[in-house]
Image (cartoon, rainbow, N blue to C red):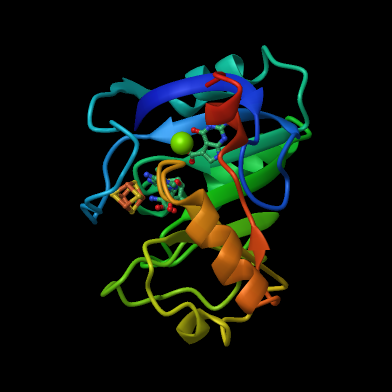
Length: 181
Ligand SMILES: C[S@@+](CC[C@H](N)C(=O)[O-])C[C@H]1O[C@@H](n2cnc3c(N)ncnc32)[C@H](O)[C@@H]1O
Ligand SMILES: Nc1nc2[nH]cc(C(=O)O)c2c(=O)[nH]1
Ligand code: SF4
Ligand SMILES: [Mg+2]
């Protein structure tokens, strides 16, 4: 059984896959308490993997995004395999503090200040911009680097910082801009 906060169908709003239809599986619970966190994830219902797969199977999208809370605390290789058996491409949104199963297709790592990283593989880095030094993240082993305004509040500052550090690209939370989930 896994504690599920919500399963919903939307577009990936952020980062490299922005605009791609995806089923989101939001697992409940996190090991961090980021002051800016935009997600209420503590509530949830226990579901079997069969129930989760049945819900995911209702939607036509190929992409599944595991998020939370911190999904790495709650998922394993077998869970990812089951999604693969449904023909899904499995992405994860993680703070990077906990190891991941090695069969995930796409890893989005969003490092948090003061939280030590424990993962060695990531496809994209997505930093929530709070005026911190972003160059410390530039040695991470990712192909893509995104800087994301915090709660859509500091977009101009984020644009300026990206233009000063062109290794980075702007990630907007586009779902918030168009009022979808
Ligand atoms: C809610 S978190 C869940 C996954 C994981 N715990 C993590 O932090 O990566 C999903 C994404 O939203 C980002 N995020 C959280 N609060 C935000 C905010 N207020 N503004 C912009 N991005 C935010 C996180 O950094 C992460 O990239
Ligand atoms: N549309 C949409 N895209 C997202 N990308 C990452 C999200 C998350 O909360 O992890 C998220 C979300 O909550 N909604
Ligand atoms: S790690 Fe992610 S889910 Fe956990 S508090 Fe921070 S932003 Fe929210
Ligand atoms: Mg979100």
